Length: 119
Image (cartoon, rainbow, N blue to C red; front, side, top):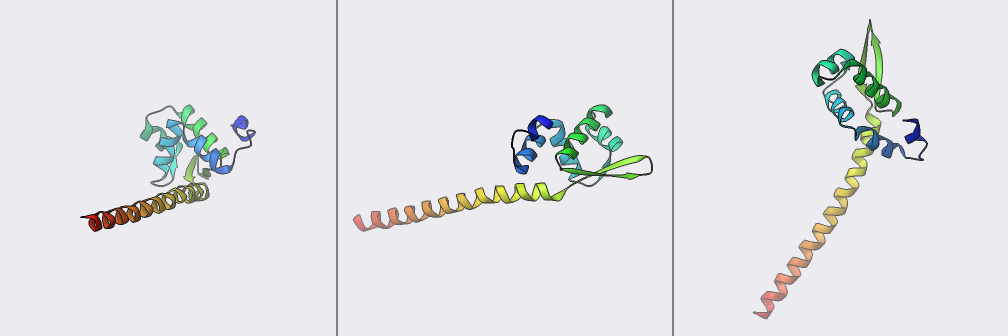
């Protein structure tokens, strides 16, 4: 994780790099449903506690999850901001495709109109 942070990455790139690992992605998907303890994550994903703890530490260092203590348990939940940034980035692609589809529709309308004139 330190290596990745030293690569001059943006926070959004760090988010994508971090959740690209399948177990971390699965943890994020699980936490999307609500806060979970480490033991709940272990049970739900059927992977070992040391691996879950390591992945949660990486997710936490990347700013994707937060942790709070509840008695002897550590409860993890998602941080909203990094995912909002991703959502905004993905939205920029939908705008691009909407423009392209609108242009395509206009071209098809012009083509159809010209074709009908020639008939």
